[in-house]
Amino acid sequence: MIGNRSIRTDLALEATEFVREQEQTKRDTAPQNLPGVDIENAGTQDIKITRVRVTSPTGEAAIGKPMGNYITLEVPRLKENDQVLYEETCKALAQELVKILKLKENSTILVVGLGNWNVTPDSLGPKVTDHLMVTRHLLEYVPEQVDKGVRPVCAVAPGVLGITGIETGEIVKGIVDRIKPDVVIAIDALASRKMERVNTTIQIADTGISPGSGVGNKRMEISVNTLGVPVIAIGVPTVVDAATMANDTIDLVIDSLLNEAKEDKQFYDMLKNIDRNEKYQLIQEVLEPYVGNLIVTPKEIDDVVDRIAKVIANGLNIALHQGITLNDVNRYIQ
Image (cartoon, helix red, strand yellow):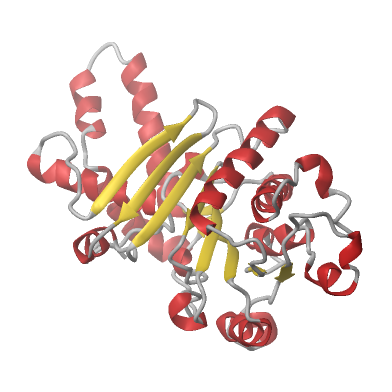
């Protein structure tokens, strides 16, 4: 929820875009900078990086996201099996994580893989933990066999409320109280408001996470306020709602008809200029009696989630351990 406007997305970048689009529609001018929201662009053509920083309560209220830093990596070809791009994405993710984590030499890190391992679009978190360099036990029991620069990392995939009967936040809180990590890194699947960002976008945030909030299923917050230690959230949108898909499809059809039309272009221009957010609300109202709260994911989600899980895990492996490269990772993964 952004202000009093409903929008289904977990991405701060999309929330910012939504508010700027609304302001542009009201004023009929180019999008303006939002008070209390700073935006910085970086990266390359293959890996676009956008850093959104919410600096004040005004910015927080405007985009509906807590004050803090939100880093988005947009990799349009992330779904492809491109080894070079895979390695570049791992390294880019690691670089952004190093900046935001600011770890000490002996910092203990707890990685939490949120989500339901039985539901593929929601299994990203548990799959990331499968590919992590888990080293806390090695440093405790066989420290002489561990390379210099390796930090104590532990990981858990606590499941979801429907499986355990326990709020995920309560499970994580119990573990944090017991092992006392310096930072918690939570991995979760997200929701997007644009089809092109599904399975191609990675968001890093230092404000924690509310599992399920993007699909209207908000649970106990996992943040510094609830755990008492800093929480970094990493997520990838794996789903969109049906109204978003229908809205994007209509726009593509209108563009196609506009390009082919020899007459009546004025009619198609009129359709194209209908406010996107008003169109979305109309589609949502029309679909509700037939499909309800329908969430959609691509058919190749199995392979894509596996690939993205490895990207995030190896980005973490490089960021959390000093001097570790992709070639070193396999020695530590059982």
